[in-house]
Length: 320
Ligand code: PEP
Ligand code: MG
Picture 1 (tube, protein in one colour):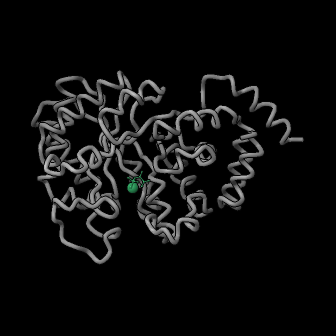
Picture 2 (cartoon, helix red, strand yellow):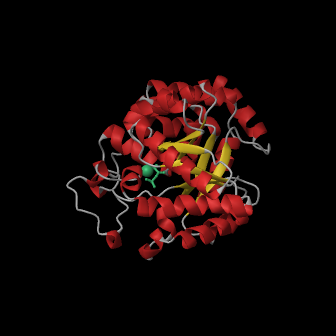
Picture 3 (tube, rainbow, N blue to C red):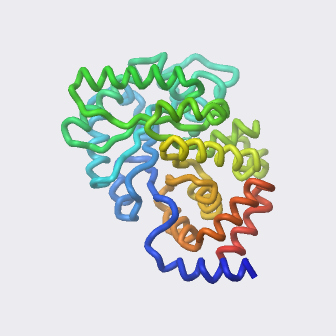
């Protein structure tokens, strides 16, 4: 009976213009920003800057290249914010041109912010370019640091960013971290005191929590971003964020999957970052939800979890 009621309500809600969460986009090339804006995304939740210059890695250290690219992208999305993730090199994102030392365990090595803090020649050009775009164009940029593990890393990165800001007499930009290392998720209360926003990286968080490689074809059917350990972690991050007035969004493959998006919304994530081709289906699924269906989904996600259990449940509840 409750199921039928939930279904009736969710069908009624499908005409509504609003979804329970904000939908932002992700792009791989600057030229896709216009397409994203046209698709109705509220700005860019993840601008993965390392992807912008794939095959042209020499541009990574070129401040002017970053500057022009950020300006183009910010203009394309109008007044909406652009969350610029500083270089996330290492792990699966190899940049041969940089000739970084080989590591036995690249996913646990000098990745993301760990590299940026060791290589100012990579970090500074993009920080300078971002603050210049904000100063010259009023670009609504936000800076997000990947693979942050310790609060000290964030404090150090934020200090470098603020020095650049002062030097350029630029406006301040919101500073946030990706929650994708379990240590960061477990200690997120410490981060919530310092950051302006948090964004959960579902791909890496799942990989590291479940010790399952995101790139292993042999494990492609085993890796489960809806594993109960993952859903509980997302819930705890969302709750801590809400208690501290810090917005918590989610990005990664799960956010672009209609079932995953609904589960993430049920867990209290307030924005989802989705690639253009997935926007319509994700929007449709979210519009079919209401408070009752979301509560049911949240209970199942936190008690049992697992794709095998949650996928059929969400499909039947929302008539997907
Ligand atoms: C993630 O880890 O979920 C994420 C969005 O970042 P990437 O896939 O680029 O590591
Ligand atoms: Mg990641």
